[in-house]
Image (cartoon, rainbow, N blue to C red; front, side):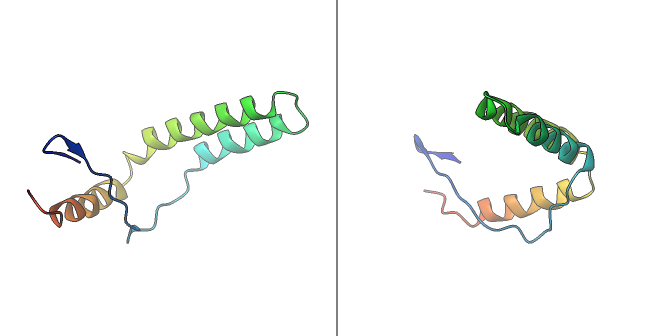
Length: 83
């Protein structure tokens, strides 16, 4: 949140359970398998992590839970002082 020239970062546990997305889990599992014993282990894992997050971001937006979690985030923002 940006306010008065300052950036505020707020974290809070979510009340809504976030489901796994099978196609995204498969991307991560493939990266784990590929990285086993590889010389470029970190590179493969980092790319797998980025691919997983890209997939999750894309697919989660289409789930019925996305509006619910968005509402939770908005409710949190609304508790912050407006100086």
